[in-house]
Image 1 (cartoon, helix red, strand yellow):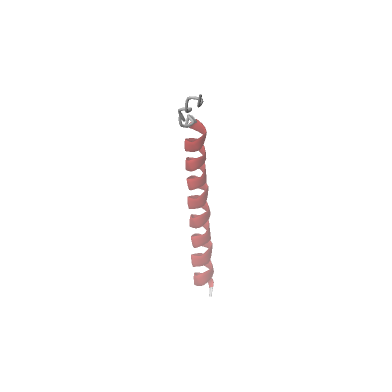
Image 2 (spheres, helix red, strand yellow; image 1 turned 90 degrees about the horizontal axis):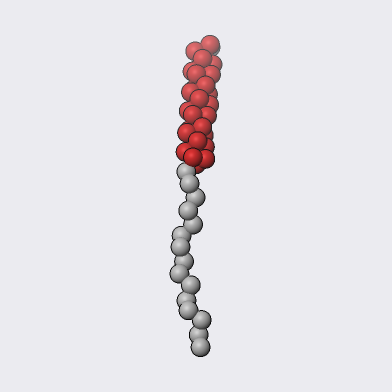
Length: 47
């Protein structure tokens, strides 16, 4: 009966490590990216 428990524990460990690594990767990529808002040209005022 220990085999299913080992499989479940190993699967959870792999899932946690994968999730943590993806969160770290996306977090560092997002933090280092520069934010440049799109330039929106303003219309000249109507006369």
